[in-house]
Picture 1 (tube, rainbow, N blue to C red):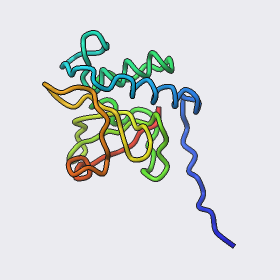
Picture 2 (picture 1 turned 90 degrees about the vertical axis):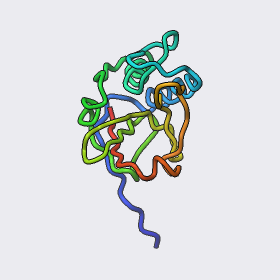
Picture 3 (picture 1 turned 180 degrees about the vertical axis):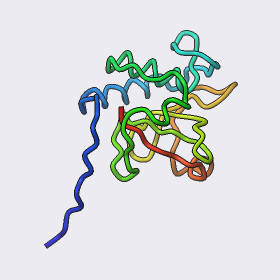
Length: 138
């Protein structure tokens, strides 16, 4: 008989439908220019502005406006239990420096840096796989 690993239940404010809607909308914003302090598709996004915009518009959830505050917001999720719509928060030595929205299959949408644009990246890429990452569920 095959043993089945238990699924970790993590409290969430989002239904699965809302989490999927967050994911689809985040993917639709790929290509939007980066702008420090930006929080709309018209003006561009920084990473926390992208998260705030997507969650507010698609799920009616207000998120913190800074990456530092996002690192402790919501519920912690172990990597093997992530689902679409979870937050991906990066930071060396526990200091949050960047965040994005997990879209499944080891990928996330984020607004990376000045001169860049919102893009889809893989957690297993050369750069991101070397970063400390935590997952949060709104």
